Amino acid sequence: MLMHRSIAIRLAESVNGLGNAGDVLDSLTGKWLERVEGSWFRATALLKGVATEVWSPEKYKLAHIRLHDVIRAKGTLDPWEGAALLFHAFVGQDRGRLSHTAMRLQTIDNRDARHEVERKLLWLPLVKLEAGQSITDDAMANVILRQLQFRAASTLDSDTLPQICERWAEDSERIPKPEVKPIMSAVMWSSIGFSQSLKAPLKPRLQAIAGIGALPGELQNFNADRTRELLGGTDVAAAGIPEIGTTTQMMFLFAIRNIRDLVSLEELLRWLDGVAENIQQQFDAMLEWSIVQSLGAFIQERGLPNPRKPMTGSLG
Image 1 (cartoon, rainbow, N blue to C red):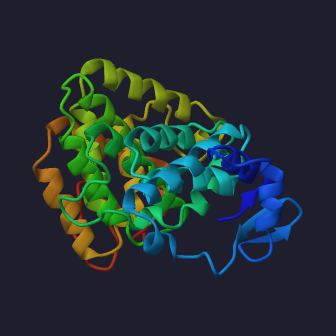
Image 2: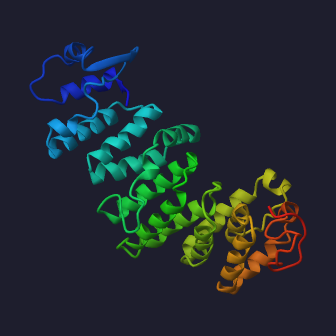
Image 3: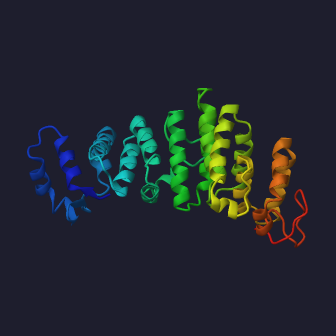
């Protein structure tokens, strides 16, 4: 990854026994460091990939922790530096730095800037995807990291989204504190249920709908307030979504994109038969929405079974 001169100087200053950091940087430029443009540098081919061959695992991790710390000390970061911050914490295997950075990247105020950082996290959607694997040995840190992993995979339109949903659910179940677990589960279900990615599968979307409906009362009220804020916009009303729509119904609406064939429709029908009656009622009521009617969602004319009530149109 590219390194700004100010970060390189801070890195040199973190090593005991070095003199003027700027002189050290200039002396390394050429054979070891390449000036890309202006104040930006990167390692030359002579250095790439050799750290694990010449350093112990402990020293290798320490180098990445130092890189993480000097990047963080810079203050305002560009998207590449934000992504590098997480990468170095991950390679350094520092649980505290890793979870803190993951939370920091998810709370960037500017949405465009947040998405730019997520686009730079090309490696994150590929990490620890096998059943039973966790990113760290801490349950809370894992859930925070899975949330960022889900966001990055959604932004990058990654094919690993189904696996990430599965691992996120597994990690959420491992949270030891009963008072925290529903909160973290609510975040997970809300993220999956309102995902706009076509690669977020139907099964976790339906699990999110059921999970949101089983939350404690105060969390359900919080989600209901957020949904009312969403439905208060004029664009939403113009689209044919009533202001009395519930969180469950909005999640069903987002799940429309997953109902593409007879198999997915049958999966939905089987699931509806096994859930609480109030969820079934909300689904039935949503079928009357004009936006659902215009999309022709959940059923098509060419022989698919009627899910709950008569509808016409082509399958959304």
